[in-house]
Length: 111
Length: 113
Image (cartoon, rainbow over all chains, first blue to last red; front, side, top):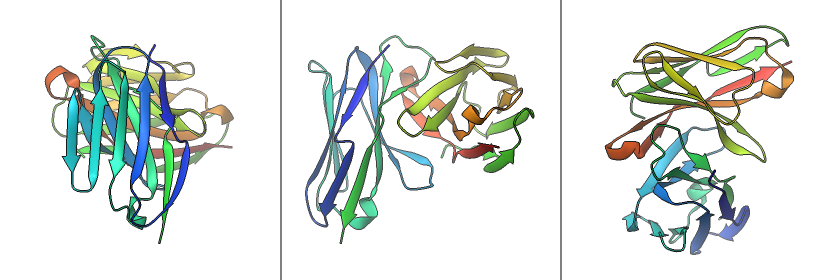
């Protein structure tokens, strides 16, 4: 079973700061997801990665398959970025049997 | 949201009563999942389905059963609800090549009193 670790667990920053959230996993994967969950809200997939780097607006996600590590970066952070960010992986050859999730990073951006 | 609807969105029930949560999808996806989300644990897989009448257990399946008689509906049943099943329940689907894309429903907040 894959062990997915996220750091930090909690992060408070000022508006405009550059944010980095890290995720490491223990077993080879076919895909890694970064998810966003606002308080009381649903879960939205921000990125799905199997290699390299993806960018969407102010969000950047990278993955290093050899090191079993991924990072989510937020540039020019804004209070609306305040949310829980969750890393989730699908194991290689895992077929239909779901995702394994990290416990999430609770991000607060103060104005 | 890939057309995923969960119902009900909120429910309070008494210990020992049966409860059924429904996940409905509109796009004929094959793979569907039920997860529960609890503080300190993150999301954990309860059951999943890989087709009509094809289901399997996940990490935390004790006390839960599922059914999928139609492609579009995946039902989660708590036969006799307990306080430990108070949680937020999310339905999800996986799509795309290698089933790598994931979409989630809005969640059902269940409180067992």
